[in-house]
Amino acid sequence: MNRKICVVTGTRAEFGLLRWLMQEIQDAPELTLQVIATGMHLSPEYGHTYHEIEQAGFDIDHKVEMLLGANSATAVTKSIGLGTIGFADAYASLQPDLLVVLGDRFELLAAVTAALIAGIPVAHLHGGETTEGAFDEAIRHSITKMSHLHFVAAADYARRVIQLGEQPERVFNVGGLGIDAIKRTRLLDRQALEAALDFKLGSRSLLVTFHPVTLDKQSSANQMSAMLAALDELEDTHLIFTMPNADTGGHELAAMLEDFTRSRPHTRLYTSLGQLRYLSCLQFVDGVVGNSSSGLAEAPSMHIGTVNIGDRQKGRLSASSVIHCEPDLSSICTALQQLYHPAFRTTLPLTVNPYGDGGASEKIVDVIKYWPLEGLVKKKFHDLPR
Image 1 (cartoon, rainbow, N blue to C red):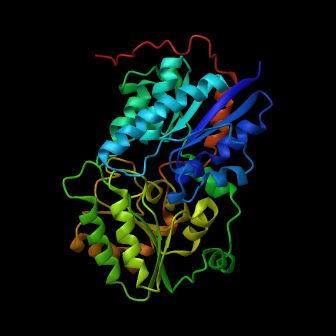
Image 2: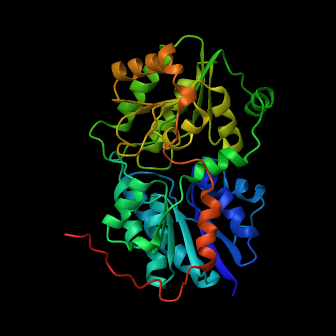
Image 3: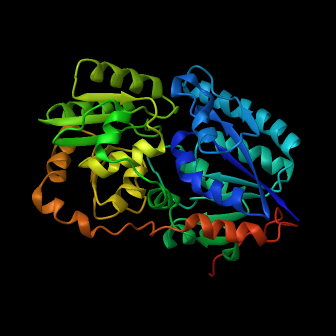
C-alpha cells in the first residue's frame, strides 16, 4: 500500500535541511510526498520562500497562513493558534499516513498539536538537542512527546530522547540532514556566486546570521548591538548578513541590520540566500558568525570556523572549529581575533563534524517505507533502569 508522507516546512533554513529527504520520498515508489508550506515561507517580508520549494521540483499541496504582522510574544502565541486551525483543515483534506517535521520552531508546535488530535503519527527529525537560550528548547521536547518515530543527529541526542520516555526501538541515529545538502548540492564557483549575490567577496569575508534569543536576560537587541560593534572594528572584511527568523523581537533586529548595512558598502543584507547561495558562501568565507545552528551543524563540514555568540545554541554538540563566546563586545572581539589566528586556522582542515558524514535522508526513508503504522500512535512510556 502506498503511504502518504506529509512534510511540513515553515522556514528557508528548515527547507534546506529537508530538501533531499523530500526528494528521496518523492522518488520512492512506495511513498507519496505531500508538502505543507507555512510560516515564513508565505510571508512577503521574508521573501516568499515557498517559491524555492516549487523551484526545487516539489508541488505544495497545502498552505497554512499563520504569521501575523507583528512578532511580539502575543502575536507569536496567536500565530500558533491560527496555525493549529489551519493544520486541522489541511489534515482533513490531505489525510496523510505519516507527518514529518524537523526541529523546534513554533510553527511545528501547531502542526504537531493538530496531528496529535487527528490521530496522525509523527516522525520528528533532530530531536533530543538542547538550546538553552530560546523557548525552542521546550517546543522541541514537547514535539518529541507528541511524536512516534525519532530520527536524531547523534548518539547523545538519541539517549536524551529515550530519557524523555520514548521507546528505544523507535529512535534512530541517522546523523545531521544538513550534511546531505552539502554533499548533494553542486555549489557555485566564486565568480558565479558573486554574480548571484551581486556583491564582491573581499580578501576576508564573513557570513553573519543572528536570530532573536527568547530566554536570555540580556535583550536580543543589546546582543546584536555588541556583535555589530565588534564586526565594525574589522578591517578589510566583507560582511554578508542574512535576516533573522520570525521569532519574538525579530523586527527590531532586522531594522538594526538594515541601518548598519545601509551606510557600509562592504556589507550586504539578504532576506534569504536560499540553500545554493548559502552553502556556496561557506566555500569562500573565512567563517560564520552569530547564533544560527548552521554554524554548529553544517559549517564544520566545510572546514571553516564559527563564532557562536551567546546561549541560543548552548547545549548542542560542537566541533573543534566552533568558538563559543559571551554576547558582549569584548568577548566577541576576542573570538573574532581567535578565528583569524594562524594557530586556529591550521586546525580547521582536521575538523570532524559530530553530526556525521551524510546519508541521513536515505536512512530515514528506509525506515518510513516499511515501519508498521497501525497502532503507532499508541505509545508506552519507557522508564530508564533504576
